[in-house]
Length: 269
Length: 285
Image 1 (cartoon, each protein chain N blue to C red):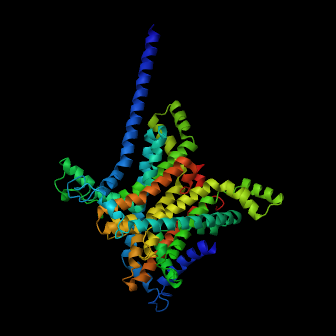
Image 2: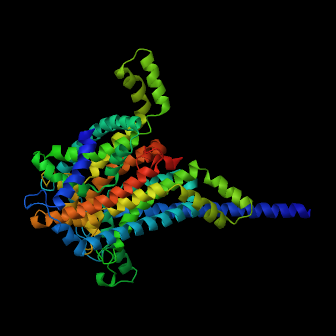
Image 3: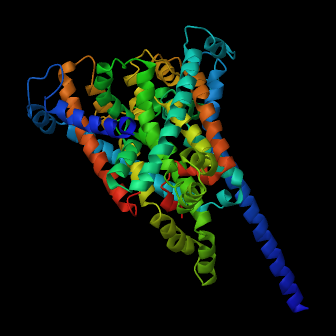
């Protein structure tokens, strides 16, 4: 157990802190706070943390709203079991494949641009807006939502079934509520009340996303994982201690989130 | 007479409403199915041809060249598939066995720290861990080797497995264990007659999910493998970088199909258990 669980986690935290303080590493010249000062006075770390938090919040928020709307207001999910099974397709699509799909559909020479050309909307790829590797991260957010939304939908559909939300909605409508009102005031709060744990996990997953930002993200600012991986750089050894400062910051943020998540669970396990 | 007319009108309105409802659900189903499935047709179309100049919707030459190239040595996709398959089998077996054992300790000790250690790899980005782990594996002569990749993937997969199995150890299981022991059974009997039969459905789910984790992994393979362990995910990213979109579309299909089939199989087999790997169990109550 210690080889597979305790050692890796302790090593990752310990090595990351030691390397960032100059205690280890082949260019090490003894303990120093130089790299921490450099990281916190520079823009890269702050930009990257804020950008990653922003992307994770937008993706989690949009996925939550979209999945709640689709589950509550479309009856098709609850009438056709096979349709729910179809949700497994985007859910199980690898991140790299999802990134490639978004690249081929939403890039300037992609499928959407070609369809619009045939409809007479665009005459050349330059008329199509930049949605991939763009400053507004549209493609990145779309790809991350495509992976997160099916997970939340499957989860909400499961709760709808196990918590018998349908019965409560019907009761509310019999007591005089309009159907929209019943969904908004009864179903949505019932689903939301059971979802903070999963929302926290999806937030953490999107915060540390790597493959999709690598394919679809902008060069500046970069998501945390991309920044760390590129700073670890085999080609710039002097950047390595900085990369470990970034790693330590990332590990602390995710560690705090995990500690809150574990503490919220009754009895720890 | 009047009441009969009113009743028949009401029935007509109700049946029209029902028809409209059915039609609405059918339209919703078709639209949703199209939204989910249409993007994947792009992969099929791109993998069945070569040349894709703007503004053509289909490849200029419709042929099986990408499929033919798949079997050539230079593409490396086929060898990548085989390596990924061998890694998946090893990691899933290792993680399932150790996850089952660790979850037992987790349940017995009920330690907060142990739970934290199990949940942490769940949310950490593999590439960050791989960055820290690389130097350790270099010291152990495991960097750039299949063993190093298997070990690092097994850490994450074991954490998945331990979380998945933690609810297996119920009071009922504990009572059955006590019964077997009171009848003179040893540890092996407990595992043979109580633990394994009870957790068999979850073992299948765990094997599939951990195999999928290894199959789809890119972070560890690229960072720890250092290009010497070539899996299909590594080939996919290389093909995207080389801008050979037809070959990349084919690699995407080959990478995604087993994953989709496996998750669909688990979902159709038992939607609850297949779903539990990613969802904290108290939320399902």
